[in-house]
Length: 407
Image 1 (cartoon, helix red, strand yellow):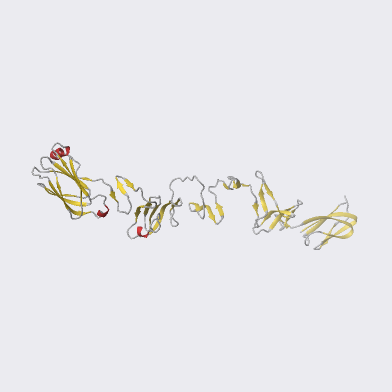
Image 2 (cartoon, rainbow, N blue to C red):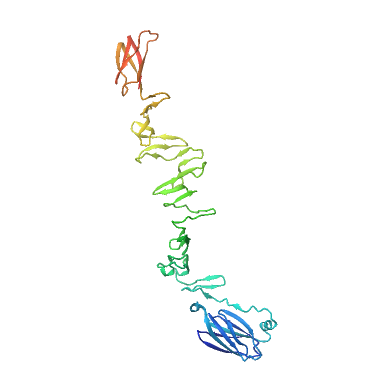
């Protein structure tokens, strides 16, 4: 086999190749590595067309003189970006296997498409060979792939290197920046973005929902800024400014708040009980109202000098107080099954006849009664009346009695 070439081709040019005549040349192969369609005139054989980027094999007649004339007829639309504009002519003798296959009508594999490096038509040194996309030794942020549908603004709108044009559905550069967009109805929305400059990975955008069909594993903590984690539309974790709101995950689950050292501060146990390991403060933010102690104990701490709060309403009005001396104050009375008692006081009355004694209540009693302290006495002892401040008690001579008043 002999090889003639490469012959460089240009549009509208005719080239002449002189090779060995018959019988030295029995068959020829024309390898067209250019983007041009070639018309080849082979002496004694006539005109033969060879498409762009194609090789084909031919037997020559006994009258072949060795002259081959090659003319460029047409070219591909990517002619200005083609890596090659040459043609080769190869000759084969009588004993070459290709010649024998052509004469015997056997398979030769021709015509074949030439698997040469082909430019994909952009402005960087990106080539395709087989199934490999190559883009080496170019400056950082060099665009490798940019795809824009018809009617959108493509690479002409790109201002910042490494940033996808506003109309691109797919953008990739050699620094690792990647943006994938798609049409949601008629709007172009972002599905995925890798930002090499910040190391950020963005899934979806604010107008779409990102659905995870499989399990998701996080190696590092999740940082929620103003996001919400939901379960079937119901918020499980949500943030609002500096507030964090948790909702139960399951009916039997445990919810816990911890500090940065992973110490449990507040926990709702699976049985519904609460564990407090840190104080709960009042609305002013400076006094402990309820403090969790050891184990499951709860300690009530003083909030005013003279008492502690046991119960208060939503507005902070104290309704029940355990005083420092151990007594209990019920500000709105103790409601019984029938009726109610706000105050009750027991005191001693002494003397003869009708005596007046202060009852110690804040207003007129609802009722009062007296019992004699003299065992077995049959003399008259009783309460004959009361005012806002006193109780009138009728006694026998030299008797003493206990009086109880309430309202």
